Length: 151
Image (cartoon, rainbow, N blue to C red; front, side):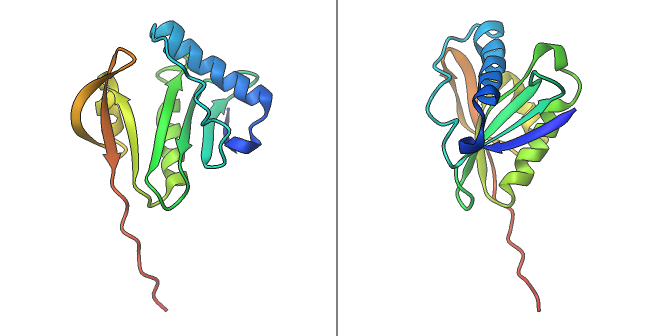
């Protein structure tokens, strides 16, 4: 199985199509949440996509928004129903945090999986809210202290 990592401008049309298809299958079809997924952020220079793809079809994906040195946003985290329980989402989150590095990051977690994000250092912040009819909560992971170089 292959972990793919591609900046927005370098994403091929075929890869973008496959990622959008997975996100649509999970969020729109399975979760019955009609929303505008194509938001103009996928191909931006400050967007980075991570996904697991064993063959022609991605099984799990996410994207990281924002340039280094700012609060980065993790979003569109999803795993195909057939691949759940394999730990792919956790592997993607670890890869995303490695990409983000010491920067602060945030995400909008579906409330039912907010506890899952706490294992990656995210802390719930503020009240629960509805996003396209689905309960969500904002979560943040603080910046890691920068270590001084000696010598």
